[in-house]
Length: 203
Length: 187
Image (tube, rainbow over all chains, first blue to last red; front, top):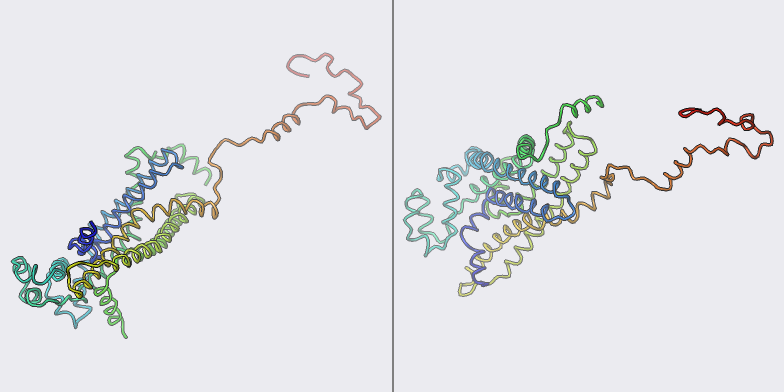
C-alpha cells in the first residue's frame, strides 16, 4: 500500500498540477468551494435557514471565483506573461521563441520530467509536438534544459493574475452576481417599497 | 540593479523552485486586506454589520496564511522521509524532491478542504465575541420580573398614600368621601 501511495505521490499528473500556479489555485479554490460550505452544514449551532443561506452564498462565491479565474485570469495572465517575457528579458528572447505558447512550454516540461530512457528516447509524440531544438533536448539529453526563466515568467504572470483576479476582481463580480442568484433561488427577499421608504425616512 | 534584473531574479527563483504555498499565501494576504476594505466601503450596509463582516473576512484570511504555510511544509517534510526501493541513490534523491513538491501541494489542498474551515469554525466565533460582543438575537424584550412587579405596584393608585401619616394636619380631600356620587366611567 505504501508503495502504491508513493507511486501516486510522484505520479506525472500530480507533478504537472503541482508545477503550475494556475492549476494549484484552481484546485485550491475547488477545495474551498467544497470545504467551507461543508463545514457550515455540519455546524449545529446555526439555525437551518441561516445555514442554507450561508452555504449557498459561500458556494456561489467560490464558484464565481473559480469560473472567473479559469475563463478570464488564466488565459489572460498566463499567455500575457509569455508574450511580454521576450520583450522584458531580451537576453532570454531566444528561449521564449522556441515555444509557441505557455501551454506549449508546459507540454515540454511534462516530457522533460519523465524518465529519459523509458519515456523520451523513443516517443513519437515528441516528434510531432516540438521543434528540432526541443526534440534534441528531450531525446538526447538525460537532463534537458528546463528553461527556468520561461517557466518563472509564466508563473509570475499566473501569480499576479491569481492575486488580482481572486482578491480584487472576484469579490466585486461575485457581489453583483450572488444576490440576484440567491433571490432566484428564493433564499433572499427583495426589499419591499415599504421597507425602502422606512430606510429613507430614517436617513 | 535595475527593475528588469530584479524581476529576472524573481522569475528565475519561481522557475527553479516554485512552491505551492507561495501563490495561495499571497492571495490570502491580499484578500485579507482587500475584502474587508471593500466591505467597509459598501454604503448599503449598516455600520455594525460592515464592521462584523469585515472583521470576520479578515480573520478568515489571516488564519489561512499560517495554516497554508504549516500544512505545506509539514507535508513536504513527510515526503522527504520517503525511500523508493530498487532505485539508484541519485534517482531516489530526484524522486524525493518531486514527492516533496507534490506533497506540499497536497498539504495546501488539505488545508483548504479541511483544516482552514475547521479552524475558522472553532476559532472565529470566540474571537468575534471578544472583539464585537453581539446584542441578543431575541427581539422580544427580556422582562425583569422584579422590575415588572415594582412597575405594577407603582402604577396602582394607593388610596392610603393620599394621607400623609407623618403630617398631623389632614388634607382636605381626606375628610370627605371622594367616592360619593362617583359614576361608572369617571370620578
